[in-house]
Length: 446
Image (cartoon, rainbow, N blue to C red):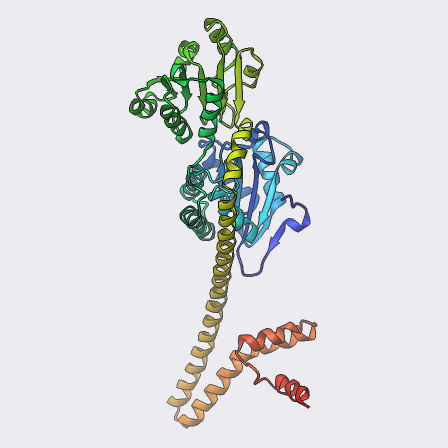
């Protein structure tokens, strides 16, 4: 949903507003997504700058290979400022961001976050990894001190909804992830993976899933390359694999039939020259490569080499579409749950706003009570008749409590806001006892 311009300014009196601004696999290709991604190292500074420069009280950022999203909470939010901030942070133009982004506000933002966490907005419908990534975004904002009570409450409700969707629907049965899709493509290229050697670059959750899928498919050999050898060993040893550091990749690349990469590196790890040298050593035996990372780990020029089958995360759509068809029924049930969850959250949010108003009014009433009580006590000390003092105190307190509501109600109705009368009648639980209603009732019965 693209909504920008004057209508993007959100101002809801007494109720916190939410905005979700994002770019994902449906609105932009990997070449754009990698430009707007935030690395883990960038996040603390980006969160602080986003809050300070975009005019939001509470902020969080979700950045994965398939999406970058900004979540903000404040009484008054201007989406255009968020767009300009993203463009400025990443050295892009605001028009580039507008063309590729979507915007959700208030209940729409709540609904969107719940759909994302439940895997309904993922490239692979129902994939479970996104919930962990949402929790990472929550933790990063919490650590940076940019979370705040309202956004925290929204995240907690989002996590609960994602859990309920997985418990009450079949969305998570036989989970198919991007990792599984990558391995499925490898099986299409190599009829017998038992004779193949797989090089996995990175040691995060996605590569962990890839490693398990390859192991289950009986791949001949697994090599895990990572910046730190210890992380690579933790992943490779249980699978009987080999661990190396990233600098050793050129030495071992010629032995690898399958290369699947997913790191958080801001720069490519594999270049065209290194792959060309490996192909010569392999006597041009085909290599299958999948680059799941955003920004990309493998230079795009590698795809132009003969005997290399290079895929990015955007190329996995055929496997993904089959998954989508098989889970459509579960997705519809999940959507209904999320609609209910969105309504429940917004209802609780409005109730919180009412609590704030009631607290302020109670403080005002107590102040008036204390003032009249002090006057009454002073009169009693001077020997005044207690009955008269109590009657006077009750009359004055009643007048003080009713004065401001009476003035405001008269002004509102004089301005043509006649709905204020019905609201006041409901607010003060007057029912049909109000004089106006008695007159209307009498006229209706005649």
